[in-house]
Amino acid sequence: IRRPLAIFCAAGFAFSLTACGNATETGLENVIESETGGDVDVDLDGDDGVSIQTEDGSFSSGATTELPEEWPGDVPKPDGLAITSAAVIGSGTERAINVTGTVDDEGFVESYGSALEAAGFNEDSTFGSDGTISNVYPNDNFTVGVVYAGDQSENQVNLSVYSDS
Image (cartoon, rainbow, N blue to C red; front, side, top):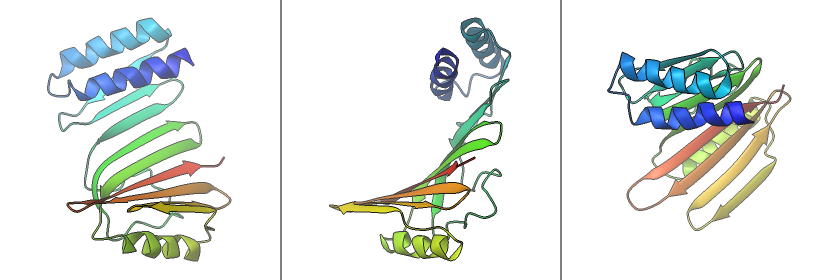
């Protein structure tokens, strides 16, 4: 557990240094490699994004307006979600994808839930309280979590897709 913890702590730290360039990338790689004993490649893209590749897996995160290229083809795209950020963690065939954005209203949750069910997902659980909705939809390959938090200025949605393999 020490290796992933060191990698993800460094990833969080890297967000604050994305404007610093190659010297920062090299420094982060050296710190992570000395803590984990493994080979690490850090890429700070300058747009508040970071990616880390190791022999055990990968992590990438940053501000974006698009779904990550790793988004599974059999998970419906979230129509109506104005994406603001995304993160992908992977190791082998396992992936966890997290996408955050804003929507017009809580109707997005029902609409996206219907799209998931039409694609073969089943609503496994649902919870709602004081402007917050949390639903989980599994199928044979993936579990999709939909969390909606509405308030008077923005309606935030967080989508999480986990591979079940």
